[in-house]
Length: 198
Image 1: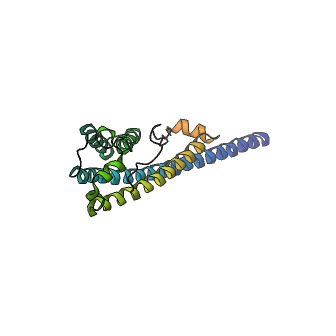
Image 2 (image 1 turned 90 degrees about the vertical axis):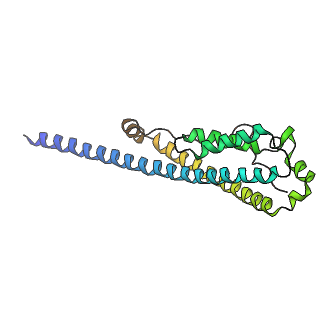
């Protein structure tokens, strides 16, 4: 093999090494970003679990003072089952979380659309019930943590998607099967957190 042949072979090998290095770096970067999304989703699920546990306790405490619409209790129970399910997809859990928020929303939580504040004022002894107050405070804290975890989750999804769609990473992603991750989107009617403060 002549001198020119060795130079060409060396150039090809150098190009292959550079290409392989870029591919490996892109792959490893995608793995890190995907794991960050999965980790942040776990934090969202933790808060969903906490919320799914708290809301029925709050409902049961209030049931002693007021008659709650059965369809709302059914919706809360169904949402809770989905959020606790190990086989539900992130999209199904997001939908269940939005439905629970809708069930808790002012004007739809108690029978006949009675607003939450009106119901509480109709039962003054409820306002002084320590268990109810503790649950209400825990739920308010959980809503704040849920909002924060959703924001962080969406930020990690954005970083993953941005990395995945850049060249040459987009080639590596398509060849190695890195799928898109869903953003957490609230239903149109659930922009505000449930109103449970007094």
